[in-house]
Length: 240
Image (cartoon, rainbow, N blue to C red; front, side, top):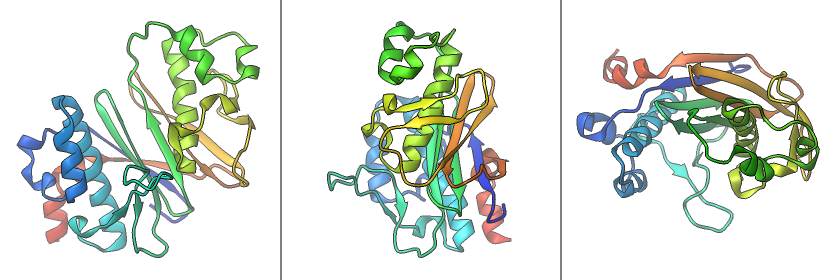
């Protein structure tokens, strides 16, 4: 991955009971969060996503993955905000996501980045959800034709909001995007960041629409990589 690219790694969830070596990479905060998750699927997604972030970022910075320190300070002052690398000058921006059978990590040397993926599954009230997700300009158009189209809009907006560091604390309805069936583009954004935003659709697996976003005058080259290989082969690479 070059400094001008945005790298995106995709991997499968991994159960903590079967991967104690990955669990050992997590810090106390991460292990506590993982233990509070009740569903095995959620624990498997959490472990894979956070271990993947440590392995990729540690390799890029020349630091053992267990030695990375993160700042998770939210606007409210608590440690549940978007994680950032602490005390690492010039550290890359990164973003985590997980849904269904996938976890993902985006890394960019050009500043903050946001990544989102959603698993297409039955939703009981897409039209009702659209009133909270879509801007007034978007609601004046035909609503998304199906769940996949709705989730495409969702992933695009969540990726943008993750890039700001605020996530869903800022309403999705403040953003007007191009329709789901056309190339992704921000048409209007109330209280938008000063820099222009770029946005790209991703389809890492069937039934898993995704999007990645950041800030700058143009969309950078986006390179996808095998996160499974990173998670399952990290000990050999550290020894080499």
